[in-house]
Image 1 (cartoon, rainbow, N blue to C red):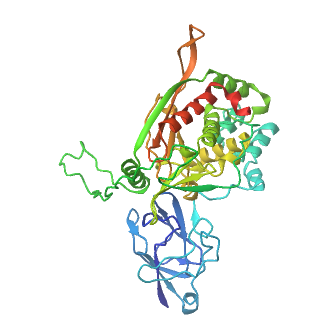
Image 2 (cartoon, rainbow, N blue to C red):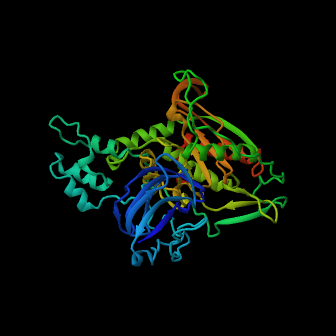
Image 3 (cartoon, rainbow, N blue to C red):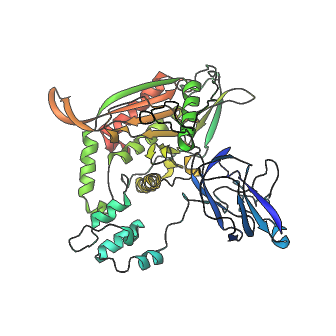
Length: 470
């Protein structure tokens, strides 16, 4: 027998530590290669780690709730000589090349290929049940054929739906409520974005697109901080509570400090008469074509941001520091981020290449994003490489705000609550559905005229959604 030490691997997220959430094995258990050993929580996701060895579990080196650095030992496995001779090859690298064999132990050793394409099982990436599995699991559920078809179309397991019918029957509203669908709109295509995805503009060079200043980057302060996870200093423990800063909260705080002190923020906002948007939403809700979808203003807002970014590309750009100097990277695509309050904290998953999606496809993408975020299953890949973000603070009853830009982006747009207010129309005061559109921008990348034009464009779509047909 030989002792193999399994160290915490780099799971392909660029992170340096993770918390041990729960062990799936105990000392003395027999495990095979790829059996799940432990569930860990990084700053971005919950991940199940498989075993690279076959044998008997020896010691659980790290305890549940403990934060462990990448490369630190977490478990030992007693393996027979023949089983230990060939460590498992895990998946592929994040660039698609075949992964190297796993390194069993040593200083700083990591398992290669623990990205979203490898065998590490992220709870964000579990496949949906097949149609056969859903049918089998729904046997015995009381539901009419149209409801069953709706559930199949939405990928909903009827057995998991709570029925509200008088005889325990699953109703249409039950299926839709379980799906928790995001806003849906359709049949409008995104404008063409061209073949060139990115363009780098050296800072100081003239730009025909406007909004590219030559200001140097602001100094970045140290993000080092000491957070105590022990008991509160006060003897009266009923009056105070100390919460350890870790996981999503730790990552969010670090990113927001970096953004706030690196990118010079400037915010603009405007009030918007969104009555036509609300009328359109109402008509679509009453349309038989939208009987299986939930319509809300968020999709129209998302489409407006994509359209407006096409007209003012600098809001979708990024300030990039390199050895050659600073430059502005203009991106001809939109990875649209949606800020989401989840049980694990604030996450900003994004829809890749949103500019290529029809309204129907964009709605489906928003649906998947919303459901995954609410369930706490957003994958690391879904949170990377965003270009511009929407935060819907209206769901909390807020009118406006000055949000902080996500690192790597230059703009974030806030949609306030939509409510009836007195509004002057043709010289008369009338009740109208009014909201506020606000945005924060990196003033190194875009100037006042560009950001104002962008917010005005977003507002114009909410005022008259028919402009999307242009």
